[in-house]
Image (cartoon, rainbow, N blue to C red; front, side):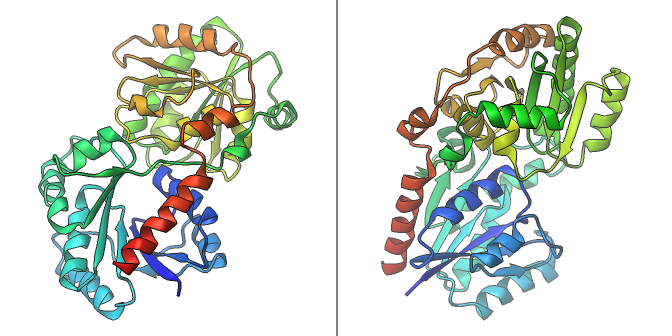
Length: 363
């Protein structure tokens, strides 16, 4: 009998945690474990069609609102109508306790909370999120985190296990042929330094500082900036690109499904995040043999090779630029064995996750 696991998410767009889930979903033995998804959006997301093709079901519910009686009623009604889900794996950040509490009251046996971040935006919702965050261990039967830092921050001293943000490392092996093809696609000359970044256009990714860094690089050498992703700050990013007169040097690719190949076209990956859980993109970049500069706000756990250099976020853009130019000359090579030895190749991780779900389903 196949064990069906319900993953509770905002939606399944091409973000970090969503891509991590799909990495696992593609590799698990779906005769033993099947993933279904409860999404808090009504519109179709990037991965929805692929999920359905692999046999997964997608359920929809109103947007998560802790003050909404309508939302809570819909949540409780869902769990009562779907008693087949005895393993619920929640990826709703600090507000996961709301879903976990409903699942507990409706008799769901295994309730997993998963931390994907090590901090939160300091906005009007911050104190509210901390309130609900502290309740997570009360309602969860199992705690997962993408890194030690993310688990310590979210679970307030409770015991947790790290589930690696593993990747299909073979897809990222460096190829000079793919590099040439992708650079030609964007009209990039071979001797041009390509600075790369993959990430949602939102505050924690710190795109504004990234543009400051790139301006300093472009002042010193022939360079292009390849920004892969999209999001709520796109208009602000485009405005700053114009203010810095970088229109002919910055390439906005939008959301792509060929990140493994786009990484081949880059020479250095710059990631000055304000906070992170454990970014899967840094694992992917290393697998592609790409030198990475990350801020000191990114957990050093993501350093799985010598390709990663951590820099104090308070350092000026000039300092970042000098380091970026220097490491961009690093020779690219096949990094598969190093990623596999680090424990971040998906094959073994997917087997272990299946074993975990099967054990939870039997107990």
